[in-house]
Image (cartoon, rainbow, N blue to C red; front, top):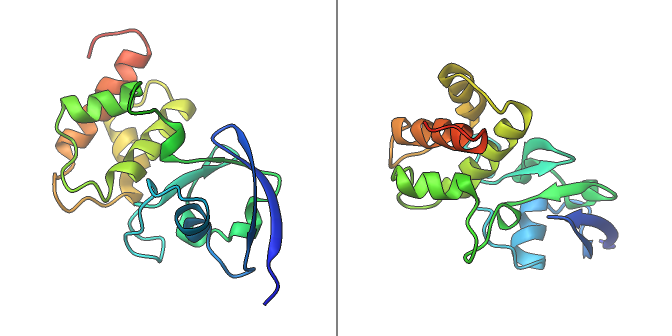
Length: 160
Protein backbone atom coordinates (compact mmCIF):
# COMPACT_ATOMS: atom_id res chain seq x y z
CA UNK A 1 0.00 0.00 0.00
CA UNK A 2 1.41 3.41 -0.96
CA UNK A 3 2.00 5.87 1.83
CA UNK A 4 0.43 9.33 1.71
CA UNK A 5 2.30 12.55 2.45
CA UNK A 6 0.53 14.71 5.03
CA UNK A 7 1.29 18.32 5.95
CA UNK A 8 -0.37 19.49 9.13
CA UNK A 9 0.15 21.52 12.27
CA UNK A 10 0.48 19.76 15.61
CA UNK A 11 0.43 21.91 18.73
CA UNK A 12 1.17 24.98 16.64
CA UNK A 13 4.20 23.48 14.88
CA UNK A 14 4.26 22.49 11.19
CA UNK A 15 4.65 18.73 10.80
CA UNK A 16 4.97 16.47 7.77
CA UNK A 17 4.76 12.70 7.76
CA UNK A 18 4.04 9.70 5.59
CA UNK A 19 1.30 7.28 6.60
CA UNK A 20 -0.70 4.38 5.29
CA UNK A 21 -4.21 5.36 4.11
CA UNK A 22 -5.78 3.17 6.82
CA UNK A 23 -3.47 4.28 9.67
CA UNK A 24 -5.19 6.07 12.57
CA UNK A 25 -4.07 9.44 13.87
CA UNK A 26 -3.42 7.71 17.19
CA UNK A 27 -0.92 5.37 15.51
CA UNK A 28 0.70 8.25 13.61
CA UNK A 29 1.13 10.27 16.79
CA UNK A 30 2.48 7.43 18.92
CA UNK A 31 4.38 5.26 16.45
CA UNK A 32 5.53 7.62 13.72
CA UNK A 33 5.92 10.94 15.52
CA UNK A 34 6.94 9.63 18.97
CA UNK A 35 4.20 11.60 20.73
CA UNK A 36 3.25 8.97 23.29
CA UNK A 37 1.20 11.21 25.59
CA UNK A 38 -1.98 10.30 23.75
CA UNK A 39 -3.05 6.87 25.06
CA UNK A 40 -4.98 4.02 23.50
CA UNK A 41 -7.64 2.72 25.80
CA UNK A 42 -10.15 0.90 23.62
CA UNK A 43 -9.38 1.51 19.94
CA UNK A 44 -13.08 1.98 19.20
CA UNK A 45 -13.85 5.56 20.32
CA UNK A 46 -15.61 4.51 23.50
CA UNK A 47 -13.20 5.61 26.27
CA UNK A 48 -11.77 9.04 25.35
CA UNK A 49 -8.20 8.16 26.39
CA UNK A 50 -6.94 9.14 22.94
CA UNK A 51 -8.76 12.49 22.78
CA UNK A 52 -7.16 15.18 20.62
CA UNK A 53 -8.50 18.26 18.89
CA UNK A 54 -8.78 18.72 15.14
CA UNK A 55 -9.33 22.36 14.20
CA UNK A 56 -10.47 22.90 17.79
CA UNK A 57 -13.02 20.07 17.74
CA UNK A 58 -12.60 17.28 20.27
CA UNK A 59 -12.24 13.84 18.64
CA UNK A 60 -10.98 10.36 19.46
CA UNK A 61 -7.72 9.92 17.54
CA UNK A 62 -8.39 6.19 17.18
CA UNK A 63 -11.34 7.09 14.92
CA UNK A 64 -9.51 9.66 12.77
CA UNK A 65 -7.27 8.59 9.91
CA UNK A 66 -3.81 10.11 9.76
CA UNK A 67 -4.48 11.29 6.19
CA UNK A 68 -7.45 13.33 7.46
CA UNK A 69 -5.04 15.66 9.27
CA UNK A 70 -3.94 17.19 5.96
CA UNK A 71 -4.01 20.98 6.34
CA UNK A 72 -5.63 20.84 9.77
CA UNK A 73 -4.58 22.03 13.23
CA UNK A 74 -4.10 19.11 15.61
CA UNK A 75 -3.90 19.57 19.39
CA UNK A 76 -2.52 16.87 21.70
CA UNK A 77 -1.66 16.56 25.37
CA UNK A 78 1.93 17.53 24.53
CA UNK A 79 0.63 20.97 23.54
CA UNK A 80 -1.27 21.63 26.77
CA UNK A 81 1.74 22.22 29.01
CA UNK A 82 5.25 21.02 29.68
CA UNK A 83 7.19 19.47 32.54
CA UNK A 84 8.71 22.90 33.22
CA UNK A 85 5.45 24.81 32.89
CA UNK A 86 2.27 22.94 33.69
CA UNK A 87 -1.02 24.30 32.40
CA UNK A 88 -3.54 25.36 35.06
CA UNK A 89 -5.64 22.30 34.17
CA UNK A 90 -2.70 19.98 34.81
CA UNK A 91 -1.96 21.73 38.11
CA UNK A 92 -5.58 21.36 39.24
CA UNK A 93 -5.69 17.67 38.28
CA UNK A 94 -2.64 17.15 40.50
CA UNK A 95 -3.99 19.35 43.29
CA UNK A 96 -7.32 17.50 43.40
CA UNK A 97 -5.74 14.03 42.97
CA UNK A 98 -7.87 13.60 39.83
CA UNK A 99 -5.54 10.99 38.36
CA UNK A 100 -4.16 7.63 39.27
CA UNK A 101 -2.98 5.16 36.64
CA UNK A 102 -2.63 7.82 33.94
CA UNK A 103 -4.32 6.07 31.02
CA UNK A 104 -7.34 8.41 30.94
CA UNK A 105 -5.54 11.53 32.19
CA UNK A 106 -4.24 12.91 28.85
CA UNK A 107 -7.65 12.53 27.24
CA UNK A 108 -9.38 14.14 30.22
CA UNK A 109 -6.99 17.09 30.20
CA UNK A 110 -7.35 17.63 26.44
CA UNK A 111 -11.13 17.35 26.83
CA UNK A 112 -11.14 19.81 29.73
CA UNK A 113 -9.09 22.27 27.72
CA UNK A 114 -11.52 21.96 24.79
CA UNK A 115 -14.48 22.43 27.13
CA UNK A 116 -13.03 25.55 28.74
CA UNK A 117 -12.15 27.08 25.38
CA UNK A 118 -15.75 26.52 24.27
CA UNK A 119 -17.35 27.41 27.60
CA UNK A 120 -15.12 29.17 30.17
CA UNK A 121 -17.85 29.08 32.81
CA UNK A 122 -19.51 25.65 32.67
CA UNK A 123 -21.92 24.41 35.28
CA UNK A 124 -21.02 21.12 36.94
CA UNK A 125 -23.75 19.46 34.87
CA UNK A 126 -22.30 20.89 31.63
CA UNK A 127 -18.80 19.72 32.61
CA UNK A 128 -20.05 16.22 33.40
CA UNK A 129 -21.94 16.08 30.10
CA UNK A 130 -18.93 17.33 28.09
CA UNK A 131 -16.58 14.80 29.70
CA UNK A 132 -19.05 11.91 29.47
CA UNK A 133 -17.03 10.35 26.64
CA UNK A 134 -13.98 9.97 28.90
CA UNK A 135 -13.91 6.85 31.05
CA UNK A 136 -11.88 6.54 34.22
CA UNK A 137 -11.62 3.26 36.04
CA UNK A 138 -9.51 4.44 38.97
CA UNK A 139 -10.54 7.74 40.53
CA UNK A 140 -14.26 8.01 40.05
CA UNK A 141 -15.40 11.32 38.68
CA UNK A 142 -15.87 13.63 41.67
CA UNK A 143 -12.19 14.58 41.89
CA UNK A 144 -12.02 15.05 38.13
CA UNK A 145 -15.05 17.35 38.09
CA UNK A 146 -13.67 19.31 41.06
CA UNK A 147 -10.41 19.76 39.13
CA UNK A 148 -12.32 20.89 36.02
CA UNK A 149 -14.44 23.39 37.94
CA UNK A 150 -11.41 24.72 39.85
CA UNK A 151 -9.48 25.04 36.56
CA UNK A 152 -12.35 27.02 35.05
CA UNK A 153 -12.53 29.36 38.04
CA UNK A 154 -8.75 29.88 38.10
CA UNK A 155 -8.63 30.54 34.36
CA UNK A 156 -11.38 33.13 34.81
CA UNK A 157 -9.33 34.76 37.60
CA UNK A 158 -11.64 33.62 40.39
CA UNK A 159 -11.11 31.36 43.35
CA UNK A 160 -13.04 28.10 43.33
